[in-house]
Image (tube, rainbow, N blue to C red; front, side, top):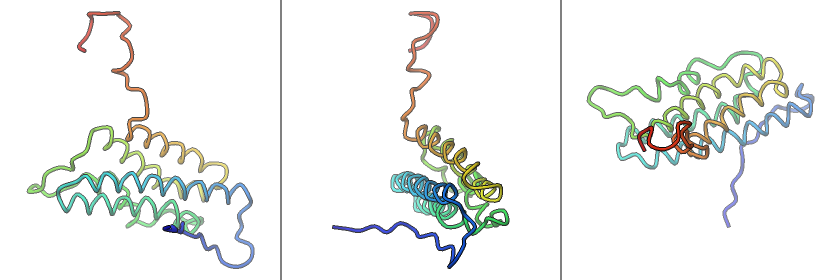
Length: 169
């Protein structure tokens, strides 16, 4: 049996300045961050190009780090420049001219960009109050995971308004 330990948010001894709703929000963020990172790593495992795997692994690590460890650490300031860049769409999509693009479906690429943007913005919720605002960012990440995993109903799967024979099937 393998035991997996979740990251522990060490806020130090004594009063950490968080109430129960803040602590719940931090725990929810850690769970969401771990789910997102797991999905991103599954995309990395699919890549045949070594640099693509490395880039997606780094992206997964950055998303996980922001949502599991940096959220409380950044309560008094915005996310650092290096970590903000690590979860940016630029770091995900840039490649040298000699390198092919990442092998991703369009919905996966859009989901990755949304996850990175929400993760980068999540520490701002910590400044304003974890319990109040963080849930919106986590809901966005969950929605992006649904899109990336195709757990939502596609528009093309819905019947057309004009009936039969009107559009491409």
